[in-house]
Length: 406
Image (cartoon, rainbow, N blue to C red; front, top):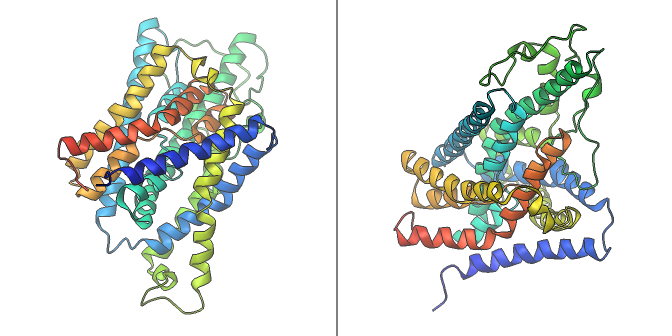
């Protein structure tokens, strides 16, 4: 008798082997230093948007599949809870030193470590293997990622942009001279592009010539006067409305909610003959997302000098992050799945996706804004290494307690 999870094991091995090929390609010089940035530019500006338009706009009928909305809300709530926990951890750290030593940049890094899940690159193939249907893998992977694009990404940008402003302000106090622009670290070859790099050298979020001392209490991690500048919000808005993934989501929603997408859904009774090439081309491009991203992941891991990249932060801190990400976050999702009354299929998909490691795109954001790079690099690498036992164990645990059976 064939083991139930043999297809899942095969998919996980395929993922790991693809990452290893990318790792070895970089190690033996088969790829150049430009491979990772060029590959991720291609993924996040062409391939992933194509997959989103095909999946959301053509493949999903939001009117017929009403359970999808509760699935999306469950992940939105998970990210909101993780954000509150990140705030609490930062406030606790500030309380211990009795001053606001940590700010919104540190909150953003923790939040990325908890819930910037690789919902599409890893979630789609793994859910496809679990349920035996690629269409279900695409459905749940995209829906899980939707809350990150419409909720977590905008807030992450706000937190990181504020961090840049705060760092510039701290530099002014240190030197007590005219404002000295402090921008993010220059882009490196291993950068993953999900949003445009922040150009903080020419923003209108400058401070006045008068430099005041920082007399805030330990619980005051935000100076709301800095958030009141119109240019600050205009810059955030510009980064959002020019983001290819958000544009693709908007197009997908328009196609689905206007029901225009059903005329491109082929084969079906509503398909317009002669337009099959639209969905086929989008699907063809979308199929390249996972393999190309995994090759880039392996190449990136070599560039981060794995396994030494895991040792860049204290072992206890890394263990805490792994336990929280791979155990606590899925348990929180289990509770949310019960509260939202997800059916067996959606409930298992939600828990498995929640247990996935964070995307290397999280490292990109930290890298662009020069905060938390070591933490995010270690979390991405360790989580990826543990992906096989994590997914298998969570499937076995759900079976053992008779929750969300297949």
